[in-house]
Image (cartoon, rainbow, N blue to C red; front, side, top):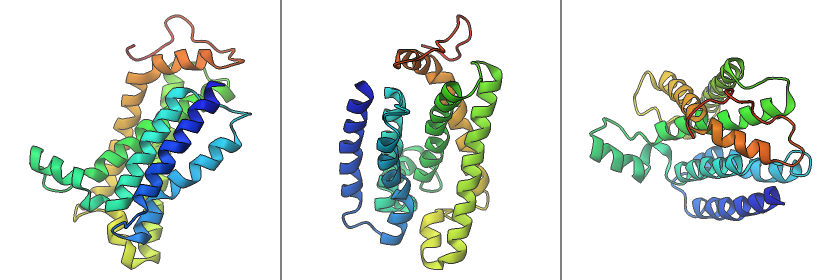
Amino acid sequence: MNARRNLTTLTIVLGAIIVWSGIGPKDRGVWWLEVAPAIAVIPLLWFTLERFPLTGLLYTLIGVHGAVLCYGGHTTYAEAPLGFWLQDVFGFERNNYDRIGHIAQGFIPAIAAREVYLRLTPLERGGWLNFLVVCTCLAISAFYEMIEWWVALLSEQAAESFLATQGDVWDTQWDMFLALMGAIAALLLLSRIHDRQLAALPGSERAPTRGAQTGPD
């Protein structure tokens, strides 16, 4: 079963990344906050494997998102070496690794939402599907911003590292805007690939109709 093989690979690779990130992180409290979704997703995917196996594309994207979270959790987002490298190369005023995280926060959930909507609801490919996928990603992003707010209220010590605002008063707005851009980019770039993989799933009855796909091959 391809889904089982894909999930096994994801578990091994992401599990190794989680273990690496947990070895001597800069801030253990921030590490737990950042890496918790990556830790939680693995048992959830195994629990739902038989009833709802995912496409290989989505398993891969979940792994990428988990790696982004683990790297940020290990170093904290505001002090990620990759962010400092980008700052030096492009002359940014701040460490922008958190921006990468928020693009991913829209990009990966967009394909996850698209898969769920196409497989479990009457929605067809087209404008309404894309609109609701983008709305879902914005809702996830907004809810995450509320989680950051609650953490800031409850834990002053971990708040600054977890929020990673770096003095930007518009950080929350930037986070949601980048999630929006990530969701739109995922739909434009990956919809056709996603459709082909959805059609290949066992028992798939909703193959894409001609002209209903969006995005380049």
